[in-house]
Length: 212
Ligand code: FDM
Image (cartoon, rainbow, N blue to C red; front, side, top):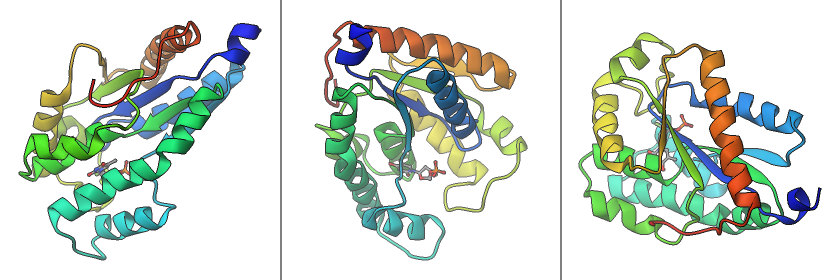
């Protein structure tokens, strides 16, 4: 219908600790929305396919060392280099399901001790999500799931600090979903809140910028 064709897509972000289930929920949500006939893409940050992304990937796998501020700015640059494409996709009606965004940037870097406001600054002017879903799990439960891949941040003590940083970021506009529920329940809940958000965007909700 006309509404579906002429209106913009929604920018939907999933956030949470490592092993919270974000990545599999993003995949499920993508296929659910595709099945319903929506134009939708699944993105993730860091996007390791770009030049900046390759530097980030090498840092995360401990193949290179970087100053904490420098890697923070690279994560941010990695979002900036995708900003115009992101806007074009949204304006052409495609909904984006994004696995991690600026909130991961702030949560992980400030967990290392970097100043919270300093961490937020380079994100100013990036597109603000229409919906942020926080998949909530305690660091201990997440660690029990096993399968920490051995990358730099995948350690219980550090994830505890990240959880504290996320708590400072969460505001009333976020939807928190209990990540310990059965996978199908989480999926159903995500589908509902996502569809609500997509409808709002179709009705003309305007795209805004960080930090609102
Ligand atoms: N991460 C991710 C950051 O530290 N800053 C960021 O801006 C982003 C997007 O990178 F530990 C961290 C979070 C995680 C790691 O993420 C890689 P994936 O989702 O495991 O690829």
